[in-house]
Figure 1 (cartoon, rainbow, N blue to C red):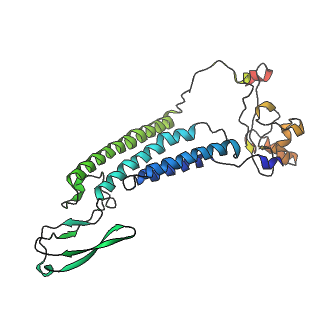
Figure 2 (figure 1 turned 90 degrees about the horizontal axis):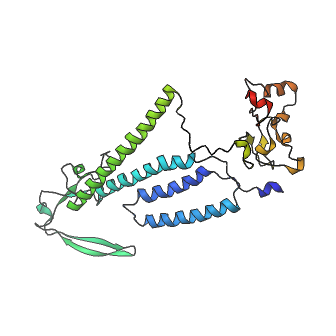
Figure 3 (figure 1 turned 45 degrees about the vertical axis):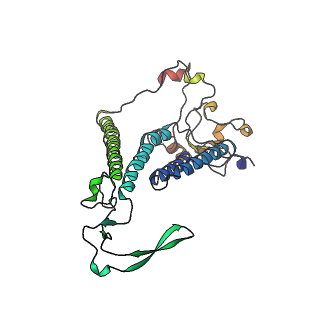
Length: 311
């Protein structure tokens, strides 16, 4: 019955994916649907409280991954999402009003003079009103012009994308130029500086060796003095077993470092070791082979022990 009380397995990366998805949708369609910011805020609020309740009441403890996922999200994913907000907003502003029509310098052909046309003006979802339009010599002629600069890969979005056409107003050109060049600056900063510096550091580390930098300060507290601390012991979890299976030989490991206790076997962790699955002495020897071990090799060197002198 204990197997039904362990909670549901969940992935931390999946929760970050949900948050990123909501932000990306709100940012991508911000120019077309500003109300999406409020919808996204509500969705994030519901996600926060739902995940908080599930973390304490439903889900089982997640693996101790550290802060790598959150740092990657903050350093790489969020800047890309913000960049998408700026650039896509510039493109959407530049393509307004999306009718692919520009005023023509040529007059309306005379054969259309005096013609009456009935146009349905859409006012709401319930329907629109009919408007009578009469063509005369003072009417404005329109021609087709391609306003889809996003498909044409025009980067960055700016008023020069009209290329002889004129579908933008004066204020629209100012906003498009400002957002476009600001987006280009952000793109240059993220791609060249951030990605470039990271690539240079990775290349330098590969050429000249590792570049380890310690995090934090030495508190003067030895590892063995922390009673609640645990070590990394290779484990395999299965729904068929209450306790995880240890993918190593735990003879040389203190039981308090493994991370769980089994009162039924008097905290004897060796019964959970997969090394007992090797039935023959030959397989056991292969499993313990130092050069090519089948299972993980974990040893504990406690302080004030003779073997610690040879560590």
